[in-house]
Amino acid sequence: MNNHKIKVVGGTILYDKLTSLSDEKMRDVAKAHIWLQMLKDIQVPVKWSRPYKHGTKIKFNFPQSQKEWDDSLAELKGYIVTVNEKHDLDMSIGEN
Image 1 (cartoon, helix red, strand yellow):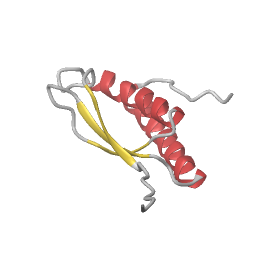
Image 2 (cartoon, one colour):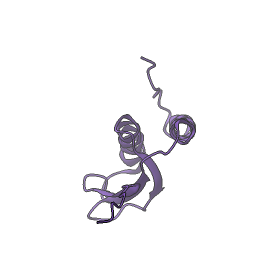
Image 3 (cartoon, helix red, strand yellow):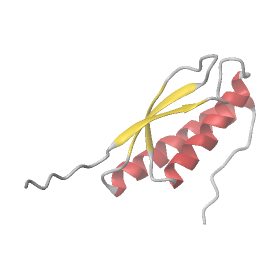
């Protein structure tokens, strides 16, 4: 009998509350929150679809290295800076 290793490396999630019917500011803030939660769940978002009436699809990978996770966190921090400037907000990620 052959022993085969199976490794799940990623997937797709549909966030049904992140829709095209929501206003842009709310979507941008929600995206930051979702992204942070995904990182906490050891998921790295790699592609965000545009928002549709039924939600937003997010393709993700499970990071294969600490660097991959760290790079996504750095990208999230840059996204937060952009959202803060765009919508005159003061979001930040707390360090624990």
